[in-house]
Image (cartoon, helix red, strand yellow):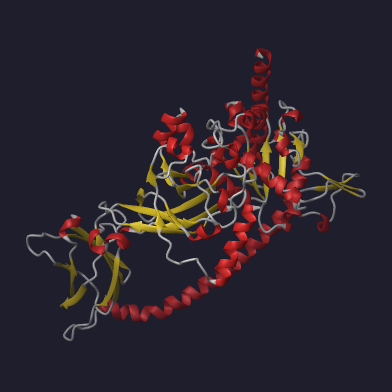
Amino acid sequence: MLWWVLLGLGQLLSLLGLAVPDDFPLISPKNCSLDCIIKGGNNCEYCRITREDISLKLGVAREEMFGDCVPWPCNFFLGMHTPAACQHYVHAPHDVTVEFITNDDPTFETAVISWRPSIYGIAFLRGFQVSLQALGGPQLYCQLFLFQSNLSLSAMEAQRVYRSDPFPHLALGMQFAVTVMALPVPEVWDNFYHSKYFFTRTCLEKNGLEKCQRDWYPTDIKVQQDGRDIIVTFNLAPPDLGISHYFSWCYGGGMRNYTSIEASPTVNKTHHSYHLFGLQSGTNYSCEIAADVVDAIRKTFSFQVMQMEDEPPTADSALLALLLPVVIVLAIIFLGLLTVISKKKLKKRMREMKENAEVIKPHDGKCMHEEHSPILMTRPHPPRLLICYSSIDGPSHARAVMLFAAFMQQHMATQVCLDMWEALSLIEEGTMSWYCRRIQESDFVLVVCSRGLKQQLGRKAQEPRECWEGDTSLVAVSLIGEELGRAKSKGHDLSKYMTVIFDYSKETDIPAVLGLASRYSLMRDLPLLFSHLHGVALQRPGQHLQVEHISEEGYCDLPAGAALKWAIYEAGQVYGCQEEEE
């Protein structure tokens, strides 16, 4: 009842414009102990909680507490003493802003986050957790702030602005995501946090052009002609940047001219001149000049070498004027012939694709007419398939998965995405970002289920705080399970998601979280999997679809299929030995 009274009072005052000043002071965190927060001391209204506080007061290891910036439930800190304080829902903060503050290091940025609490549930607000993560990078920071246990904010205090501690050593020119979470974390995780994306300033924005070596470039360039030679004068970099070597590229008249430039600060500290020799009269040139450092910005300038009054036209220029019309005519004839040949090749290739894409046979064994055949022509591109699996089952299982992916890409007209083939992208984007993007981009997602995969998922359900132990595909399986449940609840099509098992696995190895996905047993159901991917029926009245080499007996006739069959056999032997040991 008190909560509804406070909420109504705050909304009424906001509508009337009364008693809610616009200039609420910024509230910054203080140094205070957990004992002071729990006992409700007057000097512990808004306190920072450090790793040392957690380790000393609660006996919890730092890595466990702050390793992944997990928003721990409120009762982990306060519920042991006042359980009722953590049993209410608090809405997400708003007006999250990022402010860059001055520091002495020109190579890094320092940011402070500020926000306002929501009026919904403000009486039960116990604190905030702020996390900052570099997108596509390893940087991850967390800050935790708590109110003293006796503090209860009113609806009028929803206009307060709270600040975080500074986040130092942020790389310049990078994108970050900041998330501000209201505590206590509710049992239903929704609308309790607010995220914001921002870029740190570049070195040029933070320090200016004269203090950034990689961003500096010449701004004052003058060109003069001396006979048929060109003299270029440009401003030198400030001495503090330590740049003494430059380079220049010039293009014109079918020629490229590279010039290495070494400027001596003892001769001239502000400008330097260099010569361009052997240029053609009457020719336009486009040039670039830059400092000789990694990823330097290049300044572009252009000029024309003027014809000298006493210089007669050269024999080369007269010959070029005569040959130019002939060259143009020959070029037109060549392009015409090339177009005709290209069209003939394209028609021939299309005819071969129609003949070889697939063979559709009725029960009497005779081939059908053209209107029933080309299933591969119904798609603008091959279906994109993401394959997920568990590496915990050992290298023999991983090898079987890799050879299965190779067989599908070579002989089942499918564009396969596999983490073993994109290790560099995984490192650059991060595991979670990579799998999220691939799941969204793929037309189909296939999970190779195994005993180890189900055991790992079961272990994570019992021990949610444990790490993934390096098996990154378990992250994808969890995401796929969430997508299946969401699609089912909204009535969406579930055909995008499939599960398969090899001969050495059992149907009971399919995790319950993937129970809504289509199931196939390989290699027995290989034709059914092909039908699923390409959306074609295997049976029609009086007709039967048979794709060459796409069957349990025929796939091993191909070299890739034979290698896959041997890999499945070896993985089955390993599984058999493991079962005997158990």
